[in-house]
Length: 487
Image (cartoon, rainbow, N blue to C red; front, side, top):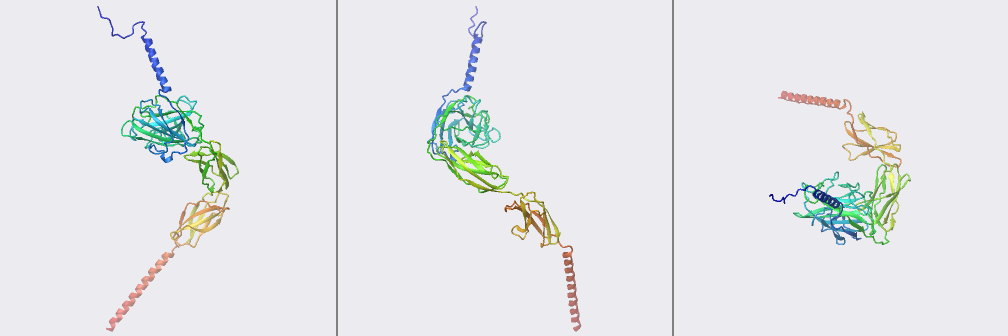
């Protein structure tokens, strides 16, 4: 009698094993799909406090020992990589001064930053509350370690700087205007390596690719922090950003109302020229936070414009397009804080003068032994009323004005020059208001040597020398012979 087949686990006809295995596989796939969309760690909900002491730009360097962070909120938060400690969590420091949001993250990574080998990267993504996952929606991001300026590749130098991004693509798109400042550094000689990332983001940058953060203590934003050591731009490591999404929650504490308007510091230009941009810059400071900064200007034609200035670093700027004609441009700068208190500067005036086109010398030709004829193209600018012609040669110390000519002139004969010498010229146009054009290119010419004059002089000198020599020889011979006779 054969023993019973106790070790055969193959399903028999009518067995429920296929159905059970299919259920198990389906449950595993469903769990994996669920894990890709929800967090397995507890997300955090924080309110960023208002603190009047900003972190200096020079201290946003990734060095944990520098910077005014002692008054910031500090919270342990999960990272998107879903790894065990110490790689799966980090300490987030956060505060704002009414104008800027300051964030710092202290965590750990499993690879060092080696420019010729392994890289790690880090990013934060923040969105409005209607976003449920980073596969879509509006995202405002800051990333360290991948962007090299033209492609999403490892940054070529260390330490990696903060890169302003937007969107939900993997990787996200770099903002056209980079108005975030920050640096990431790592420390240690072996895994786990500790890192510190620090950055500053304007609450309202004026950039359409950025979120405009509401410092009202109520508006809710979702955010997650992601790190990676074996994804795009890395050569090794086990930390992946393709695990889970921890949708943490952040609010920004309301700014206190002081009733004090913003302070505007601005150095106004006094003059400009047609055809060139007029770039204005102002430092606008308010402890409650600057909500809006605008430029009101009237151009030389009388057209008025009211435009929003752009925050670049800690300075608000705007570039007025080139003016077509001469005249006076006027403007003022207006700013308002988050509580609606506004201020404006005095009315500034900029004198815009016409930039005349440089003339062009056509030729310099000798016309007589002591003369050079300078010719130039007739000016096509209707505002030109005259020319100033300048000359220089090796005995001069500077260009010397030699002629003041009417606007229809096209030539000038310069005489009483030394023969056989090189002279250099340039010419300048001017208008009725006394505005000069840039000088033309320098052009040189040589005066002639008079035909035969120097050769004849040289021949005459040789002949006289020969005659004198013969005369002396004859005299010496005569005296010598006379002396012999006396003997």
